[in-house]
Image (spheres, rainbow, N blue to C red):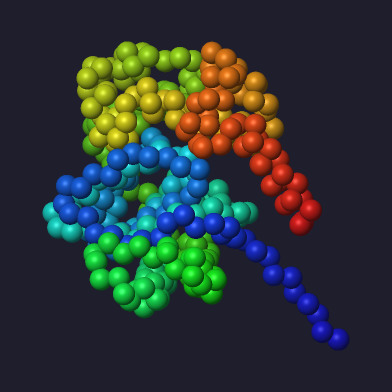
Amino acid sequence: MWHSYKVYEKIRITEMYSLFEAEYNSGFSFAGESHNFWECVYVIKGSLRVSSNRRVYEMTAGNLIFHKPLEIHKFDVTSTSTTSLLIFSFSMKSDISDFFKNKMFLLDSTQKSYINDFTDYLRRENSEINSHNKNYISLFEQSDSYSQMVVSYIYRIFLSLCERNIASVISESPDAAVFSQAVKFMNGHMEEELSVNDIACYCSVSISLLKRTFLKYSGMGVHKYFLKMKINTAASLLENGNSVSETAEMLGFSSQPYFSYVFKRETGISPSVYRHSTEQEFIDRKKND
């Protein structure tokens, strides 16, 4: 008699939003952004400074980092020559997604070979692209087998990360320390309406220095950054079962309608729809268990 063994799906990518390889010149600065899906950045060649929430990472060739949904992130090219990156963004359902948060990975030789296999496949399938910046996502509309091959390469990389090295190289520069201190303070006072002066006083720096620091590491103003932090927290509260009105009150918004307006403006979806979608996702997972 044959005995069957169940295959557990630890990661499932449900949508891809971008997939490209790009080269950036020395001094290039990518403006800060956040979105409601994951993003992965791998350094093929060169070096970057990446700010991700309150952490600032120094990345070199062979480093890989994840930006979780609604995380505010930005990068600046720090190498004196061209920096090459592989970047892709996606939505996923995973039992191990928390593992990928708030850390940078240092790939070993085996994992680098997985990345090389992936990029070789992408280049072969998109051989008509001759520019330095190669967008590999368009074939998703033309070939289901291509999309499945792409995610199979990604699964191989992601699963290997759970077994091997992590290297969180945090920048030790004084202004990076100010940025981290400010974001930590903001995170601890999410229910308040902090002013830029309140935050500058806590960090013992001038308002002008604080503003320059946030533009450097987030690409946005202090108030805008704090507002995005509140929206990120709101998403977590809604996922944990809090109502829209409770969430608005807990985060110090002046009214529920204003909170709903800001949430939709920042995420593209209303808080009530977001809450319902996460509830349905939980129900679906329970049915499949």
